[in-house]
Length: 442
Image (cartoon, rainbow, N blue to C red; front, side):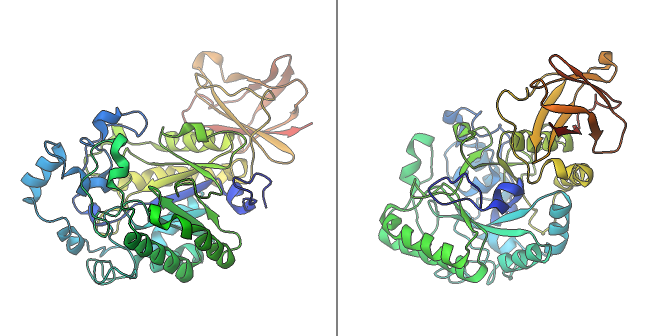
């Protein structure tokens, strides 16, 4: 167990060692697959966000906002059809969970968290209380969560479940959400919905024993008194399970951030996880182009930055309605897989260095650090050509043994001690994709 509990319960070491997980947002919204790529959460003006929502999984909400471009798109392209018709059009005919998970594992992910029910209320399993409004009885006509759980565990990865407890635009009907200041008006708080959500989460726990219980958008107020029993049941079923922090402050094993939102949670004393999509959306958004997406170097740098500060990265993929991963998303994960093939040891099961021991750097050169019990790892990129492959790694005097310097990709490197740290010379350090250099700790 880790010694960094978030709420009085030690966080399992598997989670703090994992560093990298894959989020999956897949639903009926993958059929229209449309949103405006306006920007990242936490950067876009909240007054603009909902009418111009870049999250394709919020399509049903956005098309109900008068004057929104999504509403006009829905009218002109889809004839204003009822949202639930997208469930029947969602066939997942090319879905190959083993193929997905093979890619996730090669990219270095240690856990996978699919959406089991998003805000549209459509369940990806035969959830109690949903009747036929789920993927077993309509659309794909299969239990997508069971298929994913089997594939994930066949590769010895940890399996988690996402559940939208705070929003359900079908079972907990409300007017569309128009502004972040009025989010609570869109949440069902009555006892009937609380019992509905409680029963479904219990069903997920009993069916799948998920290693991660990832709730979203809070929890209905009428059900808050029942949460201690729910968590007790979960921990009894999954001794090394972890619970996120989106339960209206009722309980958490770790904190979450999303894109640039909630960054105050990313603090050294906490166990935390940053989640985001490869683009601006979680659900597949056909309007996103290369300018909206991470490239492989950007994804690797994001992962390294998060890990260097003590967090986990939960990077999302948004599959197409046919069950394939978009080529541009596959390309990012394949790029990560190539890099992780020789750099995984500097990522998994590492921890940040102590403040003052090393100095990260954002401008050229780009530098981040991690450590394990015996080594420190410097990740270096963007060394200017004029530097001739030479970079100064600023560290506490005597922290590292320069004689032990070696690149994890096998290329030669020279290092020598200097008053401000270590001078390193090596070829190829000017690329955007970071190179990891390992030093023995003194």
